[in-house]
Image (cartoon, rainbow, N blue to C red; front, top):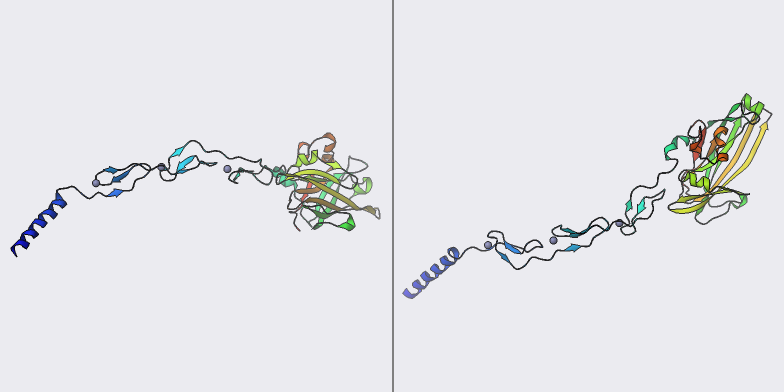
Length: 296
Ligand SMILES: [Zn+2]
Ligand SMILES: [Zn+2]
Ligand SMILES: [Zn+2]
């Protein structure tokens, strides 16, 4: 019995000694790329720092450590395609759109595009036999259609394109028109690359063409205006009626068509563009209709 008691006493002394006299239990924080394994309480360290965990440089960010945020070097920078009228520049590496699409040339002159489908509008122009007089006709654009082809009309299929069609109808019946007739100017434009379209405009026997850039590709747009009627009724009303057909790439929404006052309608003879001539930005002299997006 005595022996056991003594042993207990010795053991207690030993336990007390380890708890008080020999320091503390370290509270280790894991090693990182900034510091080795470290005791948060006494600062003692063990081993080495870890390597940085590098993420490779990208278009917009330099090489970066995912754990401490350290960076090295520079971002690579985007590799950009050219912007077009429908889309800003695209990075071929990250596919991001950077910046805005090119501004459409008619964007600042939206007020010229005021003709609405099925709504009558006044069109003033000069008289035919005497340009000191002017006349005002009543016009309307109607019957919008979109179709792939109309073989009967000779409007052929073209891969990737559709036809858009409207009717333009007008009547002149004022005194000046009855005496001197009317000098009417119909004209088509492109909403986007308007000047380029004019520069590439070609008159052919059957139809006219111009080139328009759409989604970064050049397309040949056909314009086919057919006269249904240009005739006096009982010598009091001059009736005009046209079928306007345009063949545009699928999805295109930039076809403009309408009537210009004769005094601004002469501008092409001078090699100028509509916006550069007097009256060319005046919505009482320029009446344009914008075809809707070309969808079947
Ligand atoms: Zn410690
Ligand atoms: Zn790091
Ligand atoms: Zn990029």
